[in-house]
Length: 109
Image (cartoon, rainbow, N blue to C red; front, side, top):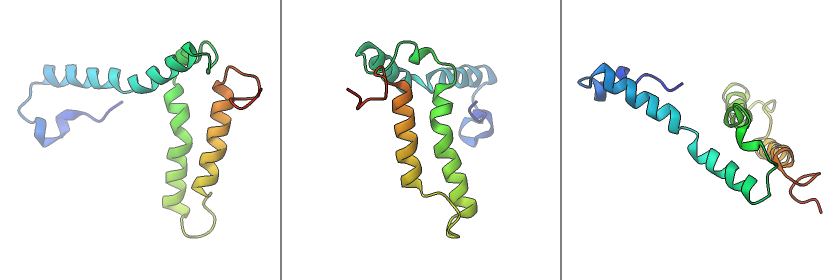
């Protein structure tokens, strides 16, 4: 859910009904780009069928990046925070292998 636009001073003179419609539109459009990529991957045979219909996939994909940011803010500089480049490589490998139409992932023969 996006933060309410009504709280922003820029929208102080906009009606509540208009703000509600705008917020609904923004919420619906939020994941369109990811949806387009997933549907194109399924259509080209790179991703397995049904991937684009997986519920909450965008949140699942983004969760490790958000967690890494939190770890860096809390633990960064003390040698206990995970290395972002290592996490990114592992997450991308896991993600692409999970979405891939080929058993074993995108590089599998």
